[in-house]
Image (cartoon, rainbow, N blue to C red; front, top):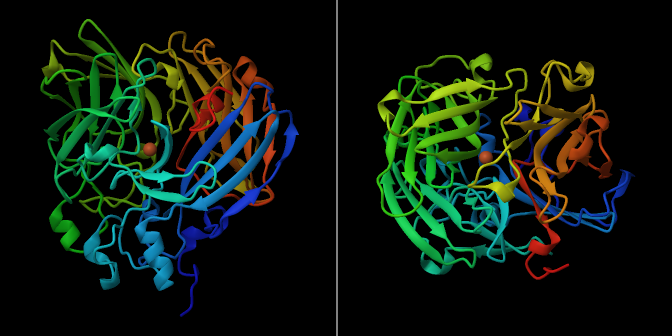
Length: 488
Ligand SMILES: [Fe+2]
């Protein structure tokens, strides 16, 4: 049979799947990789090894491909390999795509019966000595950090019982405890969320089961010192629509949004705070003091994903999809008042919010974001009319100052990650790293900036001789945190 992406115009240019594992020893570097920057930048992205069964399927259903930029003593080696999920292996054996719409098993080919449809493409983390590729519809897949070969799923010794595991677990920056969860935890289209805490050694220490007000994409949460914040919004689904053979998610602007507030410790109930239409897909972090919670997040006014339709047939609204940095204040003594929302930096648009992870679950000052901004020039002849994310930004939530690095007029950035200058460096002091593809030559690079002077531009660009696999999320793992490599 003919294998072709010809019927998939969205899979052209920078979106064309890589379809190969790769290694580059001693990458070419423009500038100088900082001597103190030692560790690995792990990334995972979504690439269709076989074209989707349906041309309008969500890119969220593309195969996970993990990659590593291993940086030591001013040099960098690169490697990439597909995550060998049961779906990826079954497709390879059949030499075609056996799976239908994103997270809809009713649209799969008969040969996919009994094969898990996850693609492990959303995030990749190191926790309790394991590197794990994450996708919110399945358990984590353990990946060997050296070979990037897939070793199997991780249910934390059998004590993590939910069948799903978020792509955005939160690890307390001081205690090392993980707060994590699975949604649709009681089966496809269920509104059950099972919430776990896991000790730094991988031991599950608590399990709590709650019900969301309705089934929603609970992609990310936030933790403060004392609370877990659970955003629920109008990205909905139902068993009915799945049985009708439709893509999993659909936007419904008639349902209220909620932020669930639940004590991190003990067995306190979740309180659902209601508010207007919004999509809080990614958070920065949260703090709480005296029963008042302050949450920072990257939020849009409506559906941010053009590939997920509107349940009422409304056209996609690009203006309302624009994602900005926002602050939410919730007074737990007056939950009926809802939340107060403030758009903090309205000219910056970007969805992939990050912080200095050492401050996760504690008071924090800085946020990081790859963003577009009217002052950041881009070459529309090369990039097209829509402004790309080509600014690496550090927001100071105390002073309102923004430090911005222009990544270049022909590059599109993935998510920015932060690497502290030393284990005990002040918050936000260190380097930023971001994967980018230069549309002028369709080759990829990692851009490194120094937070001491982002405006000065990159201190180094690690150049690859090809366009490397895409990215959804990535993480910087210092050498001292690497399994089997510590104490470097
Ligand atoms: Fe995400």
